[in-house]
Length: 311
Image (cartoon, rainbow, N blue to C red; front, top):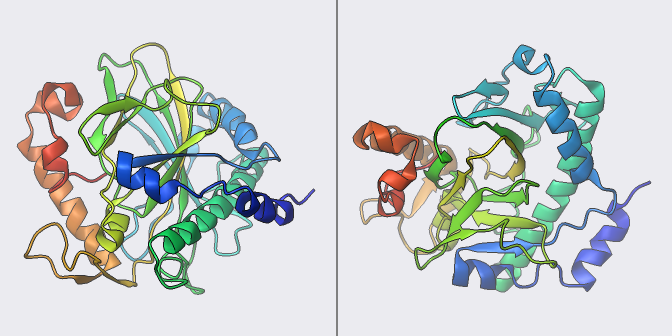
């Protein structure tokens, strides 16, 4: 059954995303409702947990990025396991494949649902910021000759590892990140006032996901990127997030007339922004004390984030 045709009307008529810009400008992140009548996210969440516990995870290949985009695939760290995928250009195959056809199918269907929500969110932001139609939409639409989709689904399994902050404070380099609430709380977002909010523990009945701003979106619109982290101490926690990006070959212009400093050009290629942010990320990781790299409670890095840190 094809739900997309009906959901186009549902999302717009009922104003699902009407207050997103207001939330982003007042809080620094937005709570949103996923219109997922097909239960695609729920199905994917079940498959993710099963896959991480299977032997196929360690056999997954890495798919290289293009145009400055990060590579995707399986990675294992001390505090988490991660599996990130894009879709092939025709959006009929997962790159890289999970090695499980049912899981791949769930990834494709969930991707289509997340992508549809993202398109509508971007259009709503264009309207609320009084931008010309396609000002933002054209930036996040992949080129026809691109080998894969721009956007990706990232799945993480956080482990009990002796650290309370299993994913340190950071901002995302991309455009927007859509994060459905996980069944086990842990995600925290920092407001524009510097307050940390446990977004899953304080969730309401009107939302089932949080939307955060990436550095590319900040450069283009002036809406600040969202510092966030994952704090978890007991057992394991599994999460799914949809990461969106601007085309690496696109030129973007800052609505602020400049970037994070007066030395930054107001117009830049997206791929150069990605390279610059990752370089700063490496620099600050070397500057911070070793004890603070895995535990953001040891040092307040929120100020440094605005200048340096991007994952």
